[in-house]
Figure 1 (cartoon, helix red, strand yellow):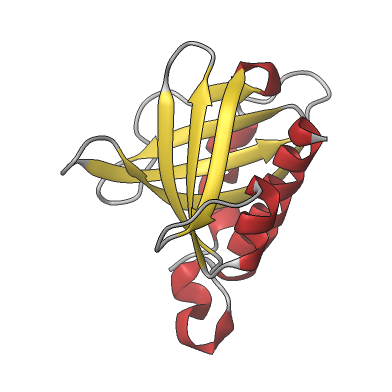
Figure 2 (figure 1 turned 90 degrees about the vertical axis):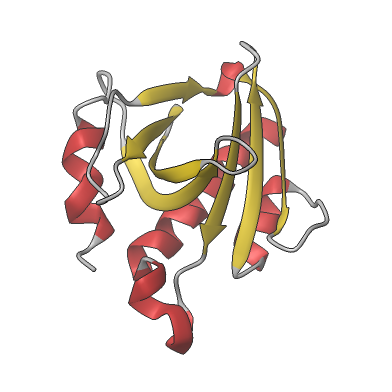
Length: 146
């Protein structure tokens, strides 16, 4: 697996607004329906989340969907097996986490994220880039909740 940063950075950076900084990138699987899903690359900036749908082969597919902090109506997160915790704590404390974001326009995102570290998962889970992206994501939510 190639490095996440080099693979998705270009398409995510193309969406940055003046002075905006891309703080992290991570991959997630997205549940779209009961039996339908896909993958996304998340770009975490100092202002927004950038959601890039991915094709079955992992290539960017379609337009990037930006989500501003003001657009987040609710968010909750917990370990992949169930239970709900503070979003930032859940993202950082579990090997796999389920994150649900509801926006002010009624749109919902159901994401599953892996930490991508350790001897067993290591690079298969995204490695260091995934870990840093999750830390940036946790901090993004910490600023909303704070």
